Image 1 (cartoon, helix red, strand yellow):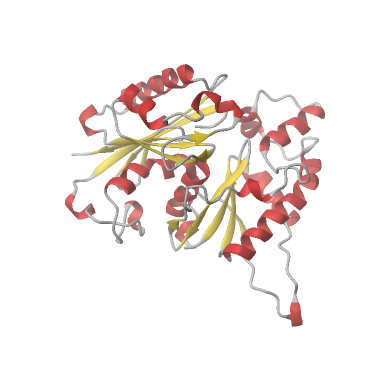
Image 2: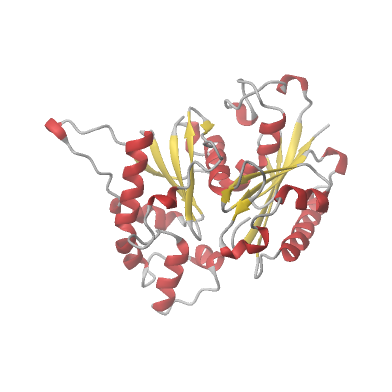
Length: 323
C-alpha cells in the first residue's frame, strides 16, 4: 500500500506472477482503497477466472512501523486512515480471506531475495526509496525482522533536523521548484528524466545522508551488497552510486572489505512479490527447507500440500491454492 497508489499481483505457489494491476490513487482513504481493490480484483478475475475456493489468503505490504507485533502500523500521514488500526481485520471483513501484513521495506527485501539480487547474494541490506526511505535486511536468505518487526527502519539513522532524507518526495519538491510539472509521485517515477533541473541538486544534497546510511549498514551488518531499490527509477539509482561513500579508517593500507552498491534486480514490484509470499511463508513454511522459487524459506509441511498460487497486492497481496 503506497502513499499514492495500489499494486496487485496474482502469484501461484511456484512464485510465478500471473497477473499484475496498478492504480494511482488521488486518495488513500479506507473507503477509496477498499473500493479500488475490489475493482482491481474483478479486473484480474475477468482476465483469469478463479474459483474463490482456490484463494488461500492475502499478504499486505504497507509503509510504517509495527506496533506490538499485531497488524497495526504507525503509517505516514498520507495513510492516516490505515494508522493504528487492525489492518488484517479490516481486509478480512471486506474480502473474506485470511490476511498477513508486513512493512513495505521488509516485503520488498523478501521479494528481492527471491527474484532479484538474492539469486546471487545470501545477505544484503535493501534500501527502499519511495515517498520516504526505509528498507529490509536479509541474512542467509532470511528476513531479519527484529524484536518488534521493525528492523530495517533505515531512515531513522538520520537526525531529521540535520540531514535531509534521500527520498522521492524531496526530489519531487526540488524539481517542482525548478519548473518541472509532475502530477504526483507516481507520475514523476513513470516519466523520470535524468536531465530534469533539480536532479543533480537532489543528488548533491542527499549524498552525505546516503553515505551515512550506507556506512552504518556496512559497519553494523557487514552485508555482501547494499541494494538500491523501492520505487526509485533505475536511472536515478544508477546516478546515486558514485555519490555514496562508505567510510573506512584504511589502516595499514589494508582496507576493510566493503559491500558493493548495486541496483535492485527484481523484474517487477519487489514489495508485491514479497508480500505475495507471506501467506505461503507464514502458513506452510515454518521449518527449514525450501519455499517458493526453491529458495530456503523455513519449511515444515510444504510436502503435504497441493500446488497453490496467490494474489498479491503491494498494498494487498493474495495467495490462492490451485487444484
